[in-house]
Amino acid sequence: MRKKMTDMVFEGLLRLADDNLILGHRTSEWCGHAPTLEEDLALPNIALDLIGHAQALYILACELNPKYANEDALAFLRLEHEYKNVLLVEQENGHFGNTVLRLFYFSTFMKYFWEALKEQCCFEKLKKFSEKAVLETSYHSQYSSQWVITLGDGTEESNRKMSDAIINLEPFVGELFSEDNFTRESFQKDFFPELGLICEKWKAEVQSVFTKANLDLPNITLKKRGGRNGEHTEVFGYLLSDLQYMQRTFPNSSW
Image (tube, rainbow, N blue to C red; front, side, top):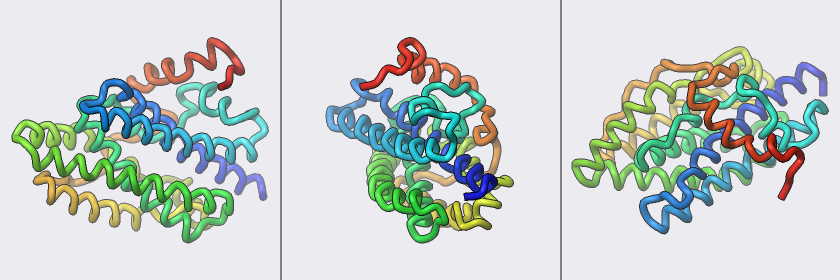
């Protein structure tokens, strides 16, 4: 693989892995705090799925860049500006409705992303991985969509909280579909799918769920961005200090 192509694949793997790691960490924060026992089991399991996706992607990335000894080095030993996740996944959990809406937005996007990669991707190892990832991500989308409907079409208070969650997250959603030089080149090279097509499918599914939930889908525009370039919100620094604590305090520690 030529260096330019290798660099592009490495960048793409980092973006995907960082998205999954950070959302996995955020979701894991519900362990022991979820509103019911069933959700206290479901959310940590979803978090484990996301972190497992991140680990697999970091392993692939390490194979392309000898600078990083293993997946732990990528997950725990980089500086804040070296993470490439979208801003949506790093936002604080807020209330339960806010958390399931964020999961619904992201997992629905990733479901269509993995489906597209499964059909066409020049990097065979990622294409193979997408076959497994799409199954788990589809469950995440289904699980979170049911909660969006339950809360949106529930009581007056639960509907209000879901409406507030839509307002809170709306500025960060557009970055999922934001194009830059990397996304355009990766599409031309058959590495990543076209984000515009995924956006259309995402909007159609979200609108369908919101209709059942008596919620209004806002106009999705690019309001806040920067995560793909390592420019994060203030809360990300606090998240990293928690995420990286053990590995930085006890270097090379492992299970």
